[in-house]
Image 1 (spheres, one colour):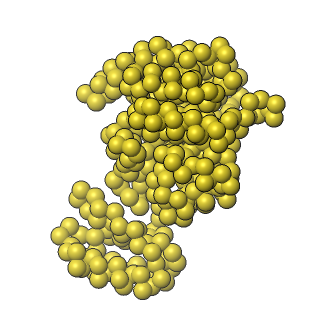
Image 2 (cartoon, rainbow, N blue to C red):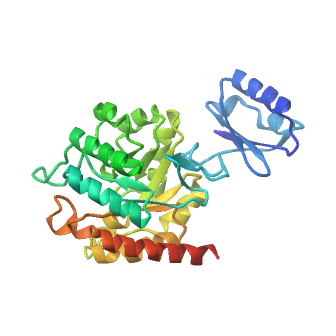
Image 3 (spheres, rainbow, N blue to C red):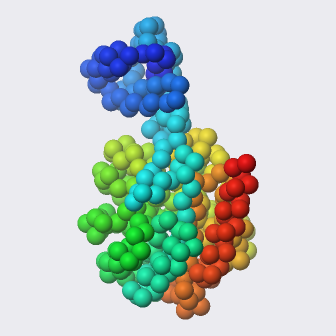
Length: 335
């Protein structure tokens, strides 16, 4: 892959003429308009392009190759932050979003009650699991299609966009009305699934795997983007280390690092990262402080009897208190 930076003052006609020539060389061209520059990302076999010839053109400021294995998700490819918009909610580029709801959808009454309460507290997106990948085959696996139907009922009742996890591309038809499709940590390197999601135009929330590096994480995002879907949200949800006191180790360094490496928005899931309800608020606030574009928090109206992950689920009143704290931290960070 190659990046060509155009000089300020390049006309639309000049740019189109250059793009036409590049496409005739068999390359795809991605255009990124920044505040002070326009960048052409050249995708394909760029070895036949003479860099010196391209760089000598009057309208070209500079030309360089991207050495990182991830190309389209690369910050060099697109210096400006990507902003994902869903149901009037923006994520990234200075826009902060809170996703909240139960780990799994259990009943219509449960999901609608939780949806109404998290919305009242300020959440903009409803999360809830319909398909649940569980470590044990004997644990509750989710309501599947019925769970999605109940999520859509909650959306109808509250107006909140919904995000829920997919486990298999065979179920894609069930996700036609889902606003954001989540790829869980266990499926981060399910490349066949990622490629199928890349052929959709749905926003994809991609969670980091339990033991994956940031480069591997971005390569998974590249799989989606290489198929044409540019709408990706990265989610840090903790990684497995030698410590067992919390469920995982929340790698908050990933937030500024991913922002440095990529233009995609980055959110944090402190619930799955810590596994303990008392750790969720401080880690959610820390996520805001280190520059995350949002948080995903588990909320249940009766955690003691939850069918999945009750130990890490906030009660609605605890979530409302957390939202107030997040607003305070955001104001402090923005000053």
